[in-house]
Length: 231
Image (cartoon, rainbow, N blue to C red; front, side):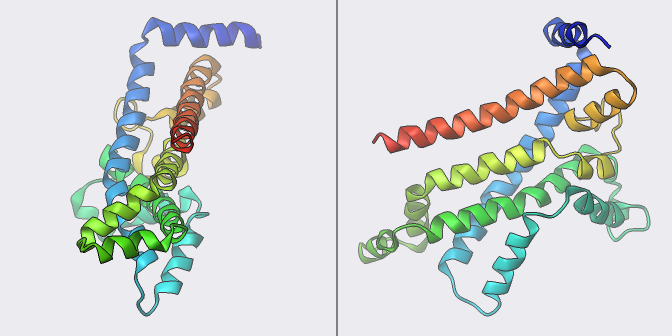
């Protein structure tokens, strides 16, 4: 196979505005961004709560969340598949093989990343920030907001890392999405399919988009942290 010619064909597909290719890219970004919009506020709130509260079972809960950081996405997909299948607990919702199922799966994958990173960031903050806010009469919510602003770069790292993890995962998306053309076929599942068929041009084109997305996320994180460090 002529890799140079295949790569040229891949870039030609991107630049030509190939409808099928860009539909795959749109579905992938739509699903992952919606998953992040759902998961981020809840996770940051839970991470802050775990970092600043004390209750029975807290340590066990933190260890469980940290353990879930390494959970295989295909296992998450399998569990979700069993729950959403026709015989499953939520089978009546008929969500299996839909974008909604993929969003749920990606939310579940993003949650432990966001919670663990936020927890670590808040625990690493200077405790005088919260103490000062309390002493000045700030409400609980205002104190939480002030603390999160103080550790915003750590929280942003959580968001960027979680997005990078879900946008490139294939196991869960394939299990609950089904890789249906025009409906649930995203970048990772399309790459796997096209490569297995020997259609390397589209796989390379989609792989380039995925790499560009990952690189953009890392550049954005480095830039924001750099800007913060200069102030």
